[in-house]
Image (cartoon, rainbow, N blue to C red; front, side, top):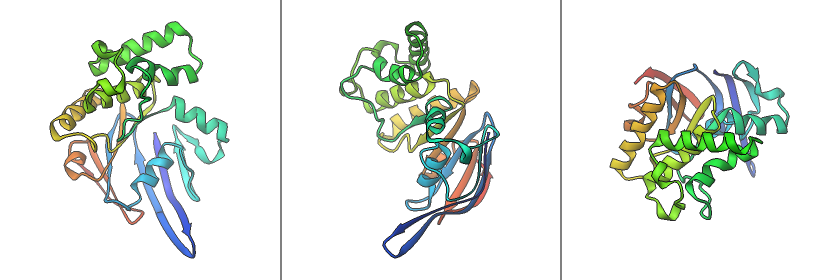
Length: 224
């Protein structure tokens, strides 16, 4: 599903050249639960942005579902981001004035889905994350764990090929983080492909495979 070969991304800060990714190569198959783990500054955020089509590599090859991302227009990349990839962020990124169900419905509106289909998908997503009784609550009326579940539901509602989670337990206490990881395992058990970006080795060990990144290089792949 994800194929990257010799991916390089260079940033320039004044006269300094920073190689955020330096010939990184990896493969992620459909149905896998994979973590990309590395310390701050290792290149994992850049890797996430390229996997999620939020950024493009300077060189190398990236195939998503067999199609070369480098050939996509900005409009096509936006369509991929909204349709193929479900994003889950550390800071939840919920709109504070909207209820849980409105936050989940928003990307479906952008997809142009009709009202009935949007309602069906919102109901389905809330059911999967166990929050049907919180659908009319705004983010400030929800705990951190509940907010993250809403964020997961929002990602699921678009029926993405890949769930891309960036430090999804980073803002949560340990018990709530464990609850969120159990949710990811249940989603994986039903067939979802999940890529989890983390600096936490204990979290990474709970996934099916670990991809380690350091100084922009994929240095190790191992079964968790």
